[in-house]
Length: 298
Ligand code: GDP
Image (tube, rainbow, N blue to C red):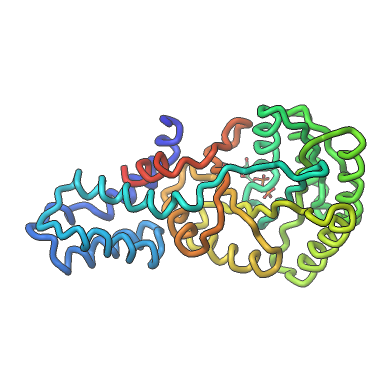
């Protein structure tokens, strides 16, 4: 929890800065409520969530609200928005393997998150196979291999420029033969070439579907919290092109833009399965809405 608080420290600072002075005004009138709403928007919580929180505060009919009271109510209201999207990632897909496609723009932390997620699942005694489906960048293949070594998970890969769907096919075959429970697939993140990306993803889906009609069981979008509102635009694009089933938020440590989680939860209602709070192997954490809400509210 301390680590989590540490991770959200900058976000909390920003929220606190933006709210400074508002709670100490004499009366909680409309203009103060407006200011609070604006402060929340400026803290990356997004217009929808900020309005909802404002309305919730107004509905409580406080005459006055001190800073402590404001933080408490803020934490409560943020938790209400986050709780419905905090879901445990369940990897029960059967027949094995349960297939997770991981998508996201380059640099969002996709490969790192796959490594961390693999370590997490292995800790829970699941057998994990990683597939290097981002064949566009040789470095991506190499980086996934490094993560595989680090966490003791096999990695299936082809050569640079190879067919990702072929690697995914081989991955399912191999996992079936060796009894791995979960296949985690890295994919290319070229949003600037949407048609190509869509073709690639639909081919992967076709191949997977032939092997197991339920696969992929999850399509998880990795979102870099430091990109703030831009992350929300990515959800919209990937939802259309890739059928996103859930989110993994990364780089919440060291950014003041952690409020974007609240905006994403309110706007999309997609499950958030885990949050990344560092580059280390154990820095992917289950998403605890109460702890995060309190960390953001400071
Ligand atoms: P990809 O291009 O999407 O596969 O991104 P990478 O996995 O290569 O990550 C890009 C950079 O972000 C790397 O330097 C990672 O170490 C870093 N990174 C990934 N996740 C986190 C996180 O949760 N916190 C921090 N601070 N850095 C992260």
